[in-house]
Amino acid sequence: MKARVEVMLKAGVLDPQGEAVRAALTTLGFDGVNGVRQGKVIELDLAETDPVAAEAAVRQMCDKLLANTVIESYRISFA
Image 1: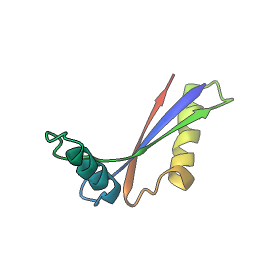
Image 2: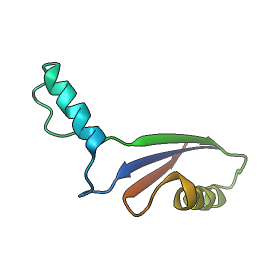
Image 3: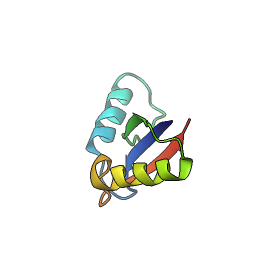
Image 4: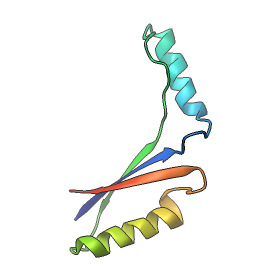
């Protein structure tokens, strides 16, 4: 089973990397970009076949390592 985790900074947390990307886009002539939030995508190939157990395991992974839940939120999807 494949899992995809999308990690983003929570609303209200400053995103200096996103701001740098927005500024670079403006420099390149893309004036219509008002904001950029940068995150990360983690793809996991799991041996687990039970969807409920897989989601529980991935949530534990996110809470313990993959996301800093103080400042980041995450979304899990399965393929």
